[in-house]
Length: 86
Image (cartoon, one colour):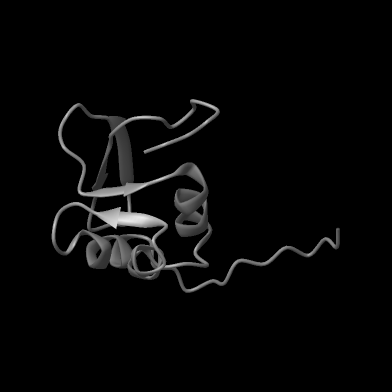
């Protein structure tokens, strides 16, 4: 993962449980999906899909099927919404 600020730079392992729990830890192994902090934020907020980010050139699928798995892992029933106007 690329992060100019350095907060999430590197390779991270995401483990999920059937109950919806998740754990993220630094990992030294090869990545399945390469993306920057902005793309990760879009996934985390639930407004974007990894497969669409790959199609747009904003993420790279390093392991076949990784984007589809990320689509499932980051899926949410709630759309991102901010009640404040800027």
